[in-house]
Image (cartoon, rainbow, N blue to C red; front, side, top):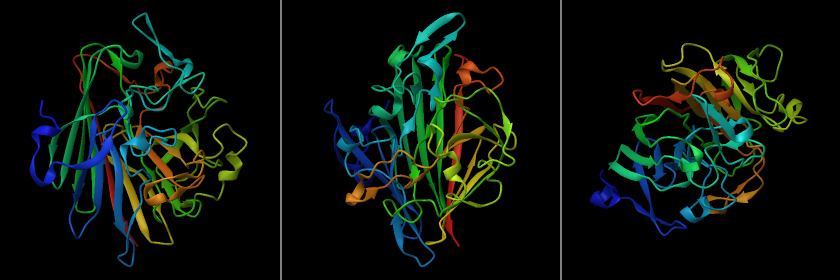
Length: 355
């Protein structure tokens, strides 16, 4: 397998600090003068920067993150831009069974398991760089059997492809044992510019007629309910702050819910549109995943990010395409089990523009 040391010249990446286990992290730039510019780190296959013009041509970095890899290993990091897995979102009770065999995971959001675990989740390890040029960065990681409690040797690739007006993220995974896999990108978006206030005045549209209600620990009840009459009815463009206060008494403290995307899973289709009226910037997401976790940054706590910008509560929106949370315990949800003869594939396209 090629590694970062095999890639030379202008696309070898820039220094991005050193991880706690002594690995030199790199930052790779994709972009052209007349289009979006993005930067990706080989730590956590993380989307670090996304620079976009507004309606007047002024560029801003609209993705929350940090200037060095050391900050991504601190308590201030809330999965900013990370590739999340092996299983994104929550697993109830931090345990599951496959073919009568029980697996115990870390309860890193007690009593549940969150985003693949606290120590060796995909977001917390260094990936190998298979390819890097001005338009594509492809990374790979081999997770050994038993890592974070999951069965099987899992090989994962993450491919970032810059488009003239967007960014495609494609994941693939295979395993030598049946194991759960549910990957997503966990970017935090503020289209006014990262660290520029809250996203309560952003306008959000989600192509979802149903959602999965949750209990007090944010685990789905198993129901799939219509969004009609609820704050989750975002089928028409809606100001994010319009009904978010109705969700404050809940454990999530705002939007942190799974909406089921209309249409056929497995086919690339429109999922969501985020618009900032102040700058005119627009993000549109198309994905082949069945659902979208919508999270309004309720737990951001004013930590200092890139260029010492402050990330205020509700200072960004996460739009995470994935399979429903806790699908391992709900047979009516799409399955997240990957058999040895199967290939996990996930494609999401983030389109960028302005009004």
